[in-house]
Length: 201
Image 1 (tube, rainbow, N blue to C red):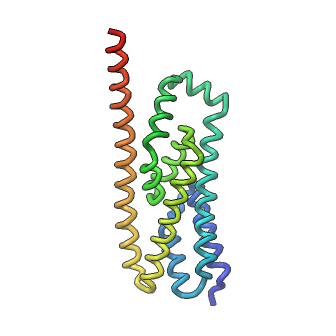
Image 2 (cartoon, rainbow, N blue to C red):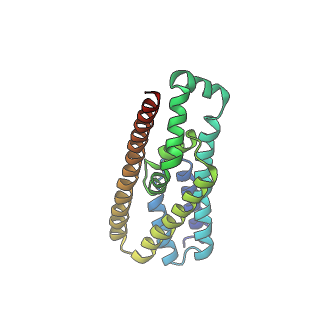
């Protein structure tokens, strides 16, 4: 007989590992959690809360590590020297202003999320905004993929196919958000440079 606690904590540990950026796909783990709830192998409300918390803590550790690392004076000096202080500030302001949707959709996409979260930390993305965006996206991810696993029950192939389609669509949205953020930062920079030239003339 499968132990209820072992299922509950195994899923929580997998989700935490995925949250901190290890190559552990979270969506299948959540669908497995939904199946465990379907089979009454895990307490529903406690499971949803702990699994949500496991992902959030992992995400915060990943974001905080990048944030801390890129605010160290030694690394900041190296970046200023080779990248340029003004270019770094332009990147940070552009990311802070237009990266919310990229962060939101990246949460659902295995392989992209860790890179986007590291970039957000490096760009010193505001903590409050990160917590708000990540908190909402994690809640949707947990409810969505646990719901798929619960609804599918024994139909594992259907659950896998549905989960992959949703993840693919959200991954496309994440990439689109990153591209739009990048292009908009270039356009705004060119417009601001044009305005400065007009004032000088």
